Amino acid sequence: MPRLARIRPHGVLNRPLGFVLKLRGGMRSLAEQGPMPPALLTSIRFRASRVYLLLSDGREISVPLERFPRLRDATPAQRANWQITAFGTAARWPDLDEDIGLAGVLGVPEDLVDEAAGFEVHRRRT
Image (cartoon, rainbow, N blue to C red; front, side):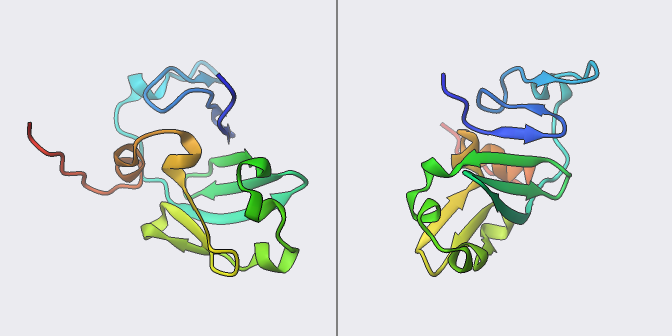
């Protein structure tokens, strides 16, 4: 499976949330820890061929720009004009008509990102 994203400083995510993560210092996996503290998108930066998404809990997600051709081909001014949207769970570049959601970057269902952001998720009964 190709690496979807890297999370720092707590570990490396190479599978969707809910699976075991490789963690430093003997930390337990997310599946064992239970609910995560709220984490929202707070900042974005670019470096070489990657985009870095900083979360409110200190984690940083790094994603190859190859996944986002509009951002890859954008000027520095276009990349710098971004907005946090969806109550902190996504980013938008209006000049490029480009949107990036944390769920898509991490390869997990939106419900998991919403829960991690501290939102109450109502599931349909079947």
